[in-house]
Image (cartoon, rainbow, N blue to C red; front, side, top):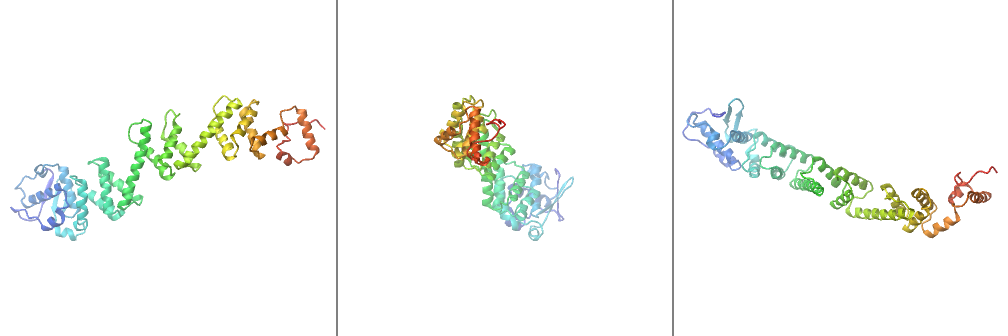
Length: 403
């Protein structure tokens, strides 16, 4: 009998009685193979030894199909499966199953029918159905939400998707508090957005295959936790053009810096990139004027951005500082000192800086500097007052003559 043994404490009968409760309450919602297995098994119970007990061969299916079918009926309380070397199937009264402690068809009959419509020819075991019922009774999913989870998993992984995968998905979604049909739908839509977004980056970098879990997690962090939109992420990708191997990790470092500065929307990023480009071009021109034959690094470009944007210095003023610094052996350092000095003295135009330089000429001989300082000392200016005038009393500007 291929491992199945059907038992009933009644004398053999030629007919196979089928309870009306089974027909009206259970049959319509049940999978086809489950109905066939139930009726064929019921026939074997009523006429033991009279028919071939190889139910799987008789119904044109596998033993696994038959086991799943009777596990399904067991979950509804219509049979009792006694596990052992031979799997004993004991039929129960359908009307008693309705009023018993087992999960009843009266409670879940409609849901089971709709669930089976999603599953098609596939039959869940009793243990699997019990977990589906937990989705409803323990986690609190709406029935439509539970059906959507099953449908989505089958669409994504195929008809042979393991139930363990479905159950893990349901538990994960429940942990987020998405229990209604709309909430579950939004969850899957967002998951698809993350997957397609991360996949689009891989395609952009000519990398085959689906995104890894780590890549999906990064993309979710950028969009959900940090609030970057697709336009902003694309803008960040343009900063990877010079990278030999663009990666999610490299992109994450760029976005982390932007997020720290509060730039997350596409519009904010556009404005920031324009400022960065303007600072880079200004740095290029200033370096050329100062005689620096290299490209400004990131820190130096940041300094130009500070001078131009934060300190409101005009490009002409910055280039004027570069012209003056060209006479120095360390032109960038000289330019930086000059701009800092002008900023401290509130100078923001070329004319003001030029007058300041003429009145505070430091390019002459040391005796000239000494005389100027001695004159100022004679007027008895304090060190703070001298500092406001842009004059330092440090050793770098005069020599102590012992007087």
